[in-house]
Structure formats: C-alpha cells, structure tokens
Amino acid sequence: MAALLAVSGCADSGPTAAEAGETLKSHITELMKKRHALDVRITDFGGRDTPCGEGKAKRTFAATGMDGAAQRGADSLNTLLLGSLSGVASYRIVEDRGDAPIKLANDEYKTKMILESPGKGKYAVRGETECLPTS
Image 1 (tube, rainbow, N blue to C red):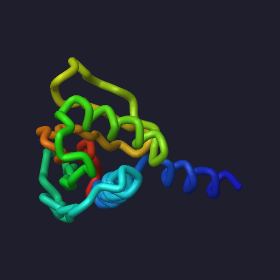
Image 2: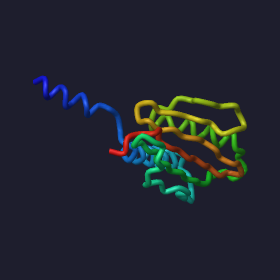
Image 3: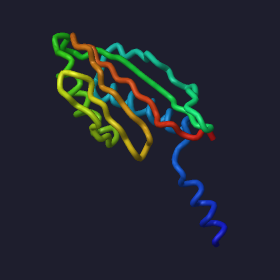
Image 4: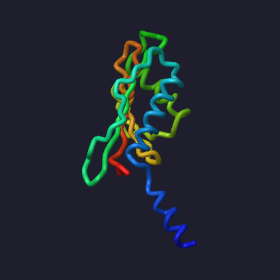
C-alpha cells in the first residue's frame, strides 16, 4: 500500500511540457470556437520544446481569427475573448491595463495566454507553457 501511494504521489508532479502544450492548444482553439471566430489561422503550431534549462522546456501556440463585426477595436475584441474564455478554462488575469494586451495564467495547467487583438475585427491569441519537465 505504501508503494502504491509513493508511485501515485510521483504521478501528481504536474504536466510535462508536451502535455501542457496540448492543453494550451486545446484552450486556444476552443476559445476561437466559443467566439465564433471566422477564418481562424494558426500562426504558431507549437509542438516543439524550447529549452529553458535543467531538463525543462516550454511549448507555444498561437492563432488569429476574424470577428463578424470588422469595426471592433482591440480592447473590445480582447474583452470579448476574455468573456468567452470562462467557458473554456479558468484563467486569472495577470495584467490588464486596458487598450493593451491582456495577460492571463492558469496555475493548474501551467499555461499562460496573451489576448493581443490588433483591432479592425481581428482576434489574436498566443500562449506558452511554464518551464516544465520534458518527460
């Protein structure tokens, strides 16, 4: 019984970079679906480790899409994304200075996201994982 607890304790050490990268990809693509974004394009496919020392790495992912109302500005688009994100996963706001990108983090999944829509109806979201073990 003690051996089983020790093994299960090791399994709860958190996600690997690859696992967190897949979660990030899922969150961003689901966010675009929730916003009903049009013409969604993946601008960073991720899928590769970016070393950050001590056997750890980060993964990235990014996408853009169009809003149905092409006249919406950057702040409005980021606010719409933020509202839709609550239906995808729970992210906390790390930084929101208004009329600038909104930086978010999810401590459970070890992911970070930046809502950085440039305006004129174009959504833009990019993200990265924390530095995590590669295996």
